[in-house]
Amino acid sequence: MNEMNAPARPWSGLWPARLADEFTFAAPTARGRVRLRTLSNLRWLAIGGQSATLFVVYFGLGYQLPLWRCVGVIAASVVLNLMLAVRFPASHRLTNREATVHLAYDGLHLSGLLYLTGGLINPFALMFLGPVVIAASTLNLGNTLILGLLSFAAVSLISIVHEPLPWAAHE
Image 1 (tube, rainbow, N blue to C red):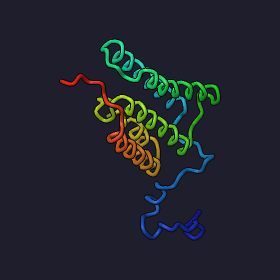
Image 2: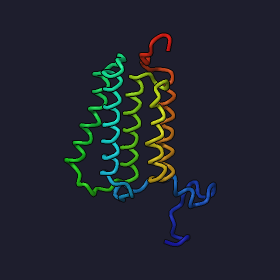
Image 3: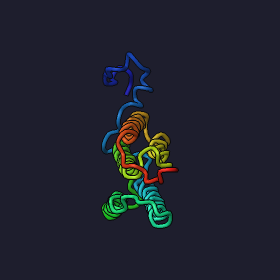
Image 4: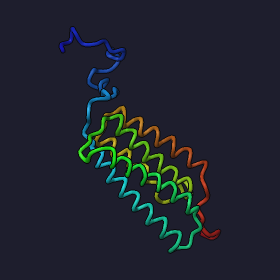
């Protein structure tokens, strides 16, 4: 398509066309670079790490966390991964929009766990960077900004509203 036949873009006069294209979503039928299996495997790693940490802190260190609510949040990711494994083949590639939704889920999942376990006081709060870093390395700028803003909103919310971390009074 040459310049004469190109569709008009309302932002074309404001930004260079190449930068403007970064803020557009891919067509729903266009498959991107991210494989569903990759995100599922990363989610399985997170599930394993979250479960191990939860059980070590609760049973090993004796901290009184809301165990069953935390297990419920983790179980939601287990169910999601199992459903995706049954529904899609291992080589399924995600569109930018689908990958953004999966990474947004992972960020909200982490928000739920951090809400239950002390908010930003929890040392694992830094894990909020994970989905955004994955998005920055695989998705377009617009989708990365969406995930960054979602993470910023979640961090802001759980910095104010969260269950207390069960530290002893002198710690």
